[in-house]
Length: 192
Image 1 (tube, one colour):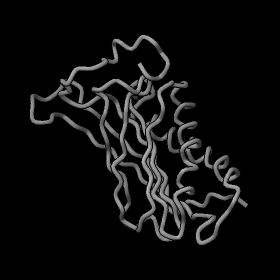
Image 2 (image 1 turned 90 degrees about the horizontal axis):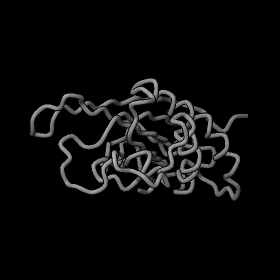
Image 3 (image 1 turned 135 degrees about the vertical axis):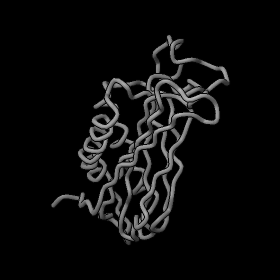
Image 4 (image 1 turned 120 degrees about the vertical axis):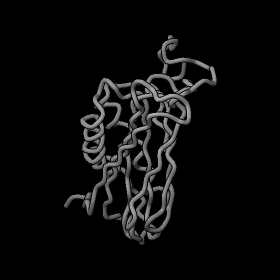
């Protein structure tokens, strides 16, 4: 029996044309793909979460591919992942997404090296989570530090988990605070 039972999915796309300054030539697109699943361990302690984490790779691939199909693989410059665990679960039930969601995004994007940022919480239905993003090839590219809100009005229910992946097409609109620019990334270690 599969450990993954999806109740619902959502895809949110934000398009930013300006942040008070002049409209940009190419708007920034940020997208969040979410899936709400039954928590197979709600209400009990499970010492071995590794099978769940391994099986979640397929869900990660589904969400990552949806984002790539939406934004265009060659246009993706930022990424992140998130989990909101219903109140009958525990934080570790969301932490399984670190490997599964990160692995999936790296695979569909051609193995970028920067760490995949994350956010997670245990909360009730309707909880909203701000998810940090950064540049996929070097996490210290300051212009690409940004965030997007994820959540679904009726999720997660107490025995559910909301898993999300996030991708975007660039840095902040009107970024002008210096630091390492994406054009100057040279070490290719995922940091600088």
